[in-house]
Image 1 (cartoon, rainbow over the protein chains, first blue to last red):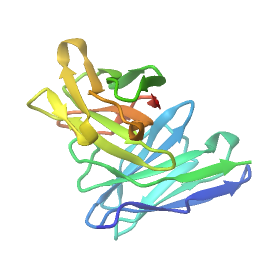
Image 2: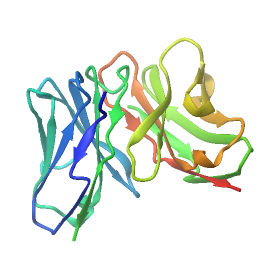
Image 3: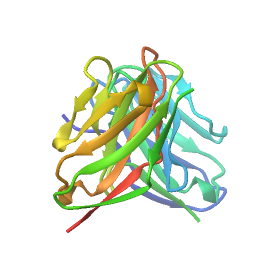
Length: 115
Length: 114
């Protein structure tokens, strides 16, 4: 069974631009969660989607948004990029909703650099 | 609210020596507890998790962790370090019985000395 895939793997943008990251979960998984990983803040939860609905949200500004499609694939969008948005963005999928009981499987991440 | 504290952002051990990575948590409800490992340029991989039952949890690659409620700790150990264990390790907590997000610690980078 294929793992979680994220595209692109690397991205360079300039301040003010917007970016869209994509995540394809493991087949049959209906939950997709997004995390931002930086050296200073570590792993921070962005949001979780389950059955095309946002079920949980972290403490990030409205510039960060996401969506999930009927095939469970998810996209994350960041508008008006800032230098501080440079990070590794990780996607994780699980069978059921919530990160506790249901094991999350992580993709390799998208490395975003904002210049 | 849940939170996780990992003691030591970097830990170095000699090959063959005991690995001990410390994790303390706070949780207002009984927690699920996790250890994840991240190798360079890769995502996170679940090493082990505590849900209910036995407090000593065995994971992959020879790692284990013990849930100590009285100490609010979930330290990760491995009897004998191997060079391939060099990676970053994350402890995480999530409230039991609720569909809630996982809170991660800041991570501990494990260095293995030859």
